[in-house]
Structure formats: structure tokens, C-alpha cells
Length: 203
Image (cartoon, rainbow, N blue to C red):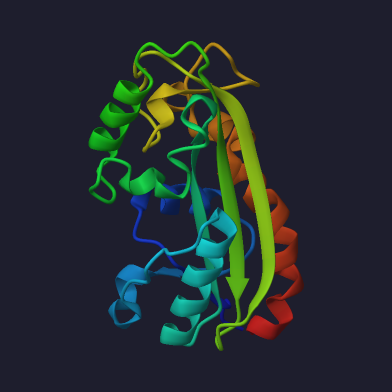
């Protein structure tokens, strides 16, 4: 019997690498939006990570006719009133420009003593008709370093220090340690049992 197909609604290679690692053992054939150009893009108009995850999963599922998982995640900084939040990927004004987003955040934090922050992730699973049937969430609490450190990870990882490993940024951790503490790792550990429950329907 062939492995069930699951569309991962992302074009972010960093996210995809993490998800592939975390989904090992689920015997799923993972596909991405790169192989489904007809799915196009969906405007992330939701006010919350959960709303955007639902939007992306539902849109890509209907466009592809496949079971689809999508996630939305970002950084919430207390000194910035929770920003950049759902605008994390486009904080600098250009979607997906990690270097520009990081530079802007460091400028925004200049002179601020409260550097507490958290990464938040929401994941959604949608049937081929677009109905969202499962949601999971994860949070990684920590603080912002004053300067980037490390070459791993992506996005804001070089300046985020998780509370569980206070002497290294996420970009300094190996993949295993990062997955243990990250918001995406936490969300996926909650998500996988929900996904497994739907495997019989996905055959």
C-alpha cells in the first residue's frame, strides 16, 4: 500500500526541513506547494496565528485536493506590545527577508531593557474539501539577545534565547536540541497524534 500523501502548505525551506525531521516515522509522503503551483498564495489576513494556519490549510487543501497541514508562527516581543506577531515574516515590509526583519527588530529594541519574548506556532490539518479537522499549538518562551549569534536555523533564531537553554540562541543549537525546545517542535508533538488519528481516512 502506498504511503498517504500530505501536502505541507509552505515554501519556506527552513520550516520544511524542521517539519520533515519531526514527521519522521509517520510513513507519510510529504509534498509541498512547490509541486502544486496551482495552489497559488493565500492572503494571511487573520489576526491570530491560528486564523492564518486555518486559512492556509483550507485554501491549499481545496486547491490541491489533498489532505493538507499548514502552520503559522512568529515572534511576540513584550516590549513591542506583542509585535511583530502575525507580521513576523514581513516585519521589514518585504515578506521572507530574514536579514531585513532581524535588522529592523534589533533597531526597534535599541535601548529597551525588557527583552522577554516568545515564539508561537499554530498548526492546522484540513481535509481535501478544505474543512479544518485538527489544530495544535506550541510556545517557546525566552528572551532576545542584543546581537545575532549562530549560523543555524532561520528567521529570528540568531537573537532568540530559549528559557530552557539560556546560554545559546536557537541558531547556535543543533537540530535535535532546537526541536526539543522550539515552538514548532512543541506544536508538532501535539499535532502528530491528531494526524495519526486521521491516517485511516487518508489512505
